Image (cartoon, rainbow, N blue to C red; front, side, top):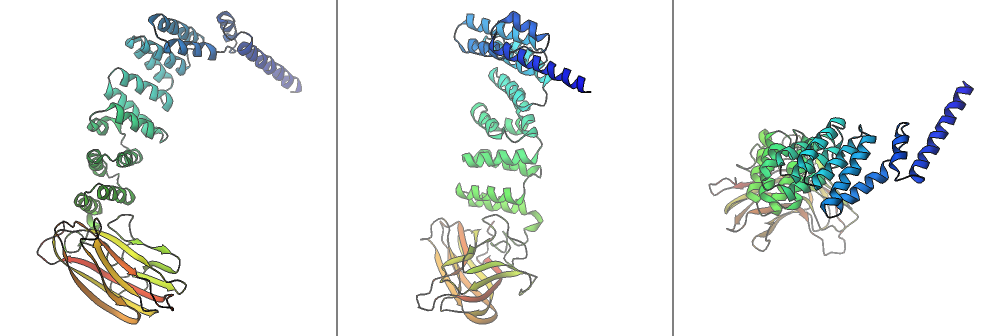
Length: 410
């Protein structure tokens, strides 16, 4: 065994030395490389680099030299898919698309699941105007790995005129890729394309609560609150309940954990108070919203906030509030205002301090013609008194915003 180990070590030393000599002593000597290739010691990096430089240089003569040099390299290592890709690119530069096609087909046969190779094949098909073939390849890359999402989606933006082709050929039947594509479109602000992609993605059941919330927020930023409300209701399905019909607020009884959407509750995280669902205390059902003030700060904040799509007309706000030892002169209030232009509508009403059993409140408001989106909040405003650090606990349940002028918000 010791003799065998010594022999193998000697062989490895010789191979390493020969390889180093191939790269340093005869880097551009084709005959030496051919000889060394018989022993798997040839070096192809300098010829490949030379061929690439020739292919980038202008002139038909240089392109032919590049193809010749890369063919020589390929003969030394015919099972290497990257060598086929290099030669294919040289042929493409020389305008020999059919020779390039053959090279890329050989490349894919040798490396069918390599994203870098697949991307080179896609680039070839894009270059010769075969967008469908290119999209089918990029869809395969998206199904294999997320690392190329940004590159591929940028290619789609530059090279594809009709994004319906992307939905038809360029996306795999894969939740992750579909989500990534929709997020790319939203980040780029492409409203129409994002809306079509949303329908494609939702139709395949790929939309989760987080993605739906992102899409709704995107539509609102794009000035489309009506489309946002419809998309949210579409996503909720059986969970919709009265939302969008007799109630413009979703999850007003806090029976479900708030979802990451403008059309559900955003609960504050701040020093001096703890805001959370409380499923031990409720007026009806099992849960309510609890706001626990710890007596360390004079808070000015929105404990809970939700946006609501509305139409012109009269609405009635309902809620039930319970308090326990809420200190200071400023306790729990409610605020409703136009989320796009607060100057059109902005009202603050009711006040709860001290200790109170479950108490009902109602407040009627008139939504003006231009208002489409309301912000509904549970707030505490700062006290102007010396003793202003608020303590105590408040609970809120059964919040509703009902249209009372004979129309539904949807």
